[in-house]
Length: 509
Image 1 (cartoon, helix red, strand yellow):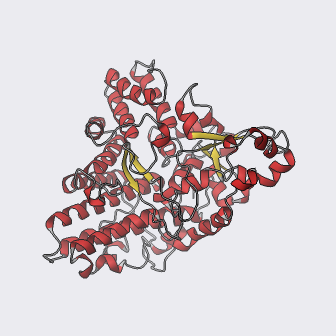
Image 2 (image 1 turned 90 degrees about the vertical axis):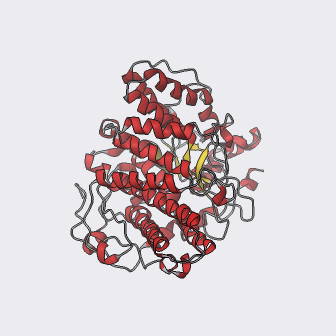
Image 3 (image 1 turned 120 degrees about the horizontal axis):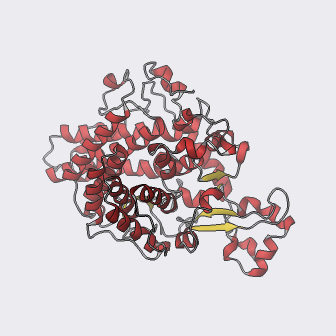
């Protein structure tokens, strides 16, 4: 019977874990409030041997994925809140969760706690950890910390710093560029121009390319620690955002040409752990701390009860109006797809078949027979003790094809751009693009990015902003009125402004 499908306790966990976001604020009162110094990363002893140093840097990955059991920019918040800010996601709780709804309506209050607790503070905390690791490795004089290990761990830390800055600057604009763990140097820092922040990312990622291994031996073959190609893939994205088309084409091409990666014809396997399409993933800890053996996307995007997998008789029972209303929390996910993105799929697109599911509704108020579509790129949900099947995807090969396609189109290499675009379309079961001019190809590539990368890492929100299309697309939506271009940046917390008056607030807040 359908009631057996309910995973008891999940929604209680959801409330508990979301509340944990508010615990991220630490007591250290500096301009960039990163909390108390991470002693384990700063002591000489920690970086005295290969194994100790490896464990310290591995802790940064754990911080990115598991943290203290809460959702943050590196493990799900970017996908959700940037998706709400664009035209991609809708939160089922609506105005009853006012701080979340502020993202959906693009009317953030200046002290929205999510903007600080899920983005600004944890990103700077991670940057502080990366800076500490870089400095401690350089200062360590231990002969038991081999040069080969020093290089790899420094490369990983520089990647993590660049990764964190990518999201900080795309969410907040100009941000303090902190490359030291010395509080005496950072306490009065002002904001750095976004152009300079991007330049630092390029420097870090170029260094990482030279320092890192080409394979995944650091993580014993699993794709859960940074290698040379992960650094190259992120560098390709950074070049794209800088509009350095030739460099973006070259970097993406290097990743595509590497034999370790290939697109999977079976779309249901793309987001499984160590899939051949993955360039970098994060591994769950499988402990009592959320997200345990799942991803936050699987937890938040997929309802407890997926009607599509039920026998006809059970479907009919659930769609009885009285029954449906009783089980709504189990049938509709916390965040579902905006109909605008669902309607943008072309007929016969296999991505809609595999990566999208829906919950039908009875023809009663307030549902009126409308279907609620949700993303199913990740489908594993909380089940203590079960094996991990999905790692969290940070970088994957399909994006590299789309980066190279756009970079080529911008250089008027239209045939080559179309060829890259068609690789993605063919995998989705679609015919070759009919676009041939530069203008048409850029439109086609933007559309393909919207579909291929939906509900992933805020790509839609960032794409609209970097291409200057955000106001045109979002300002006409009734749910985002009154529209202001100031909404394209998140506010700086009053806590940060008090600790560092030189920061200055973003316009409109």
